[in-house]
Image (cartoon, rainbow, N blue to C red; front, side, top):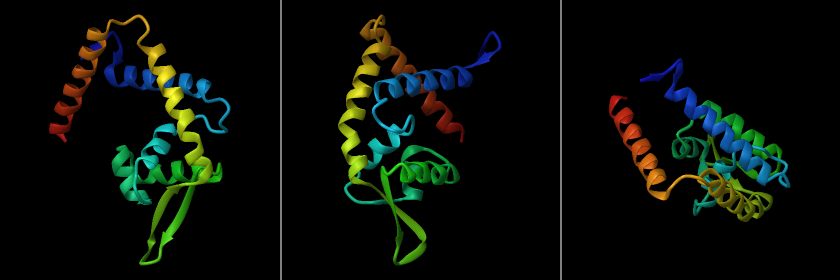
Amino acid sequence: MIAGNETISKKLRRIAKLYTDSLSLQLRELDINRYFDVLLTLSAQSEPVTQKKLAALMHIDKTRMVSIVNYLNQKGYTFIQKNPKDRREHFISLSAKGLGSIPAIKNGIRITDNMMVADIREEEFCGCLNTLKAIETNLGKAI
């Protein structure tokens, strides 16, 4: 379904960019402006994960994950360690800097989320989330 000339995909990408930009403003003390969700996902792991597993957890193409991990590693937020049993595999974990950024990221998300829903009634927002979940389920069946 296209509203005017804009697909839902384009609208969701624009909203995602606005969300990331808003969150980035909340986190301007950090020296990164994206991939906060990757850091949060890593912080929820009980042990280092492979790039392949991280890509699957994030629903991101493995090739794209390589550039994301390299960016976060160059900025000092992650460690990349080769698997001694399989040199083709790389384990990813948070560095001390990455771990230290998690409270600020969680707080920035809380502030950004509150701003995002400011003039939306709770039941409307919950309905929106339910609709998005149904869309995700329907599209997942098609793949």
